[in-house]
Image 1 (cartoon, rainbow, N blue to C red):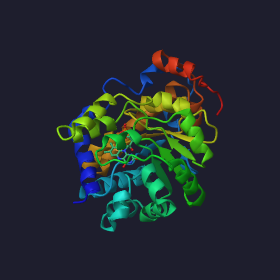
Image 2: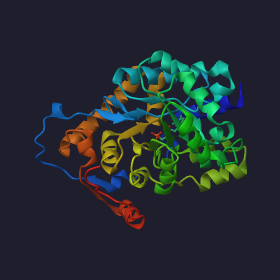
Image 3: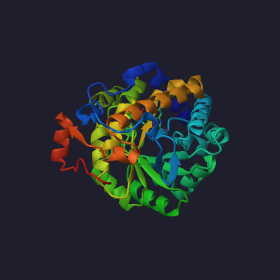
Image 4: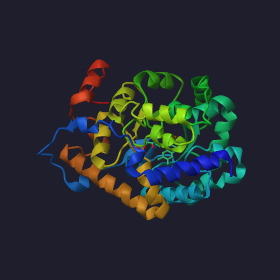
Length: 362
Ligand SMILES: Cc1cc2nc3c(=O)[nH]c(=O)nc-3n(C[C@H](O)[C@H](O)[C@H](O)COP(=O)(O)O)c2cc1C
C-alpha cells in the first residue's frame, strides 16, 4: 500500500475511533454566541418555507453541501458511493476528498469516480491541496476535474496539518499564483477552503482578487486536524506530537470566519467546521453564508449506506426549517437578512476586527 493510501486509511479510522475526541475541546464554533431574534408572529405556514438555495449558478433543494472527505482506498470507494447516492437523491452538492492519490496512482481513480458513476446528475466538486497545485500546476487540476467530470474544483489550504504530518510539505510558496492561473484556465469554478482552521477577511480578499468564486471557511470548532494528526504521530515522533498538542486549539472559530469572509463582495460563502444541527446552519446563513457544509458527522452513516446519510441531512434540513419559521424567513435569502445579536467573544472579535454585522440586504 502506498504512503498516501495508508494516510487516508489512518484519517478515516482515527476520525471514527476518536469520536468527539477528533474535535476541538476548548474552542467552539462560537455559534452559541449568536442569538437569532425570535419572531412570534411570522405569518408563515410550515409548507411555505423554502429551503431551496443556489451555489455557483446551480439550484439545490437544501443549502447543505457534503464536504470532501476521502478517496484512494477501498473503504473510500464505498464512502464516496454512499455520499454521492444520497446527494443525487436529495439534490444537494457533494465534494470528494483530495484527489492526489487518484492522480498519482490511476488504479485508485475509481475510488473517486464512483461518485460520478453513482450520481450522474449530481453537482460534484473535485478536491486538491494548495501545496499540490503549486507544485504541479493547471494540468494537475484538469486531471482532477476530468477524473470525476467535476462541476467545480475545491482547493484546500492546510498549512497547520502539513507541518504536523512527518511526511508533510514545508513549502507554502506559490499557492496564490497557482490558484490565480487555475481560476483563469480551468473550465469550472474554483472554491478555496481550509480544513478546520478558518479563513480571514485578508486571505479572502486575496483569493477573490485571484478569481476564486466561493470560499468554504472550514473554521475551528469542528473536526480538528491538529488533534487527528497528533494522534497519528503519538509515540512515534515526540517533536511533532508536541506541536500537535500546542496547536490543538488554533484557528478562527467558524462563526467569526463567516463574518470575516462575508465582508468581501462577490464571493459565495460556504460555512463548514462544526456544523452539527440545523440551528447552527441557520445562524451560519444569517451571518452571511449561502450554504453550509458537513463532513465528519456523515462519515459513519456513509459506511452504513446512503439512506443513513440522507437521514442526517433531512434532520438538519428540518431543524433549519424551524429556525426559518421562527425568524419569519420564507426563503434562504430572507434568512440571510434576518436580525441577530452577537454576544461575548464573537461580539468582541467583530468589534476589534471592525466587521460589518447585520448588513441588511445583501
Ligand atoms: C475524514 C475526513 C477527511 C477529510 N479529508 C479532506 C480532504 O481530503 N480535503 C479537504 O479539503 N478537506 C478534507 N476534510 C475536511 C472537511 O472537508 C471539512 O472542511 C472539515 O472537516 C470541517 O467540517 P466538519 O467539522 O463538519 O468535519 C476531511 C474531513 C474529514 C472528517
